[in-house]
Image (cartoon, rainbow, N blue to C red; front, side, top):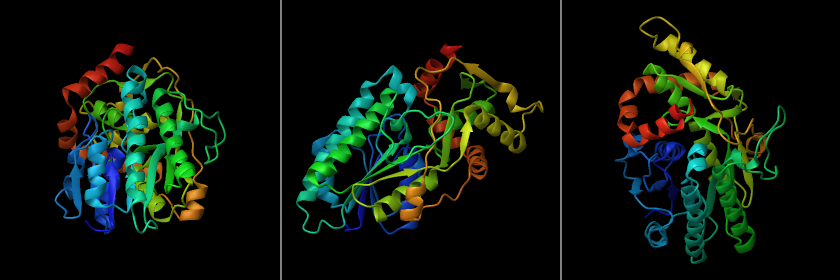
Amino acid sequence: MSKKTLLVTGGAGFIGSAVVRQLINHSDYHVVNIDKLTYAGNLESLKEISHDPRYTFEQVDICDKEQISRIFACYQPVGVLHLAAESHVDRSIVGPGEFIQTNIVGTFNLLDCAREYYSKLTDKSQFKFVHISTDEVFGSLGDTGYFVETTPYDPRSPYSASKASSDLLVKAWFHTYDFPVVITNCTNNYGPYHFPEKLIPLVINNALQGKDLPIYGKGDNIRDWLYVDDHAKGIILAFEKGLLGESYCIGGHNERTNLQVVEGICQILDELSPRSDAKSYLEQITYVTDRAGHDFRYAMDPTKIQNELGWQPEENFATGIKKTVQWYLDNQEWVQHILSGEYQNWIAQNYTERN
């Protein structure tokens, strides 16, 4: 295949699909999407580009070394954007095993196959392995301060521990084997095609269905929110311009408490899709027992990627959240297609049983 081929792992997930759409719509790369299609992998999120001649899908588990080696040999990529991961903190608390397997063992396997492929390249100058990670590896902040690239790792959940482990593997492959890597760590993402167990799509869908809007604890935990397309552009920029061995923090300076996020969604829905009884969606807000080890605050300082790579987010939270709510209102068919029995059982287990 073309020397401009990129492998994107986890390309049927929320952030991964945004990266794939961005690459197909706004670049000339060929894209090979490698996705196991676990519960959150959804090819409907790629419907608009699925027939593009520059797009190929491979349903493969990154833990399957034989298949991953075959893909490298077949497609001869110039780079890897590694997003495949188990990523929901609550799921990691009740079942950490899958997180260890995918996020640590899978990343090791991918690195091992990629290094073997890289070692045989005649021209090694173009190849780069970009590992996409999270702000959660840094632990929790107090009322002030920001995570930066040099912040010591301090993961607090099985999910963040597994991602921290994978980050350290990637760093080790650079220092030990001189393998060309870049790492990005990003804040909470939101936007279209978000699997509806996460806070923002869960609130939108529950509100429209007249259900309770569950908020952990007092709703005072703070997250820094970034529109998913802005993150996707940052990832691609890190591949194209990022310096080898470097990490880049990607954040939007859009800090909101969970309660502020939910209230904001309710107010937008009151405007765009009023309740039939003319009451506010705010009346559906309820509070459930906080989750174990719930980090208080995350916030990123994106100065490095802004100054060195020229990245700037296009959306602030006010514009991005309104776009997101409108997208869900306009795409209820997509939502209904993924409200499977497995999803429903998870929501019941994680929220209803907390009351």
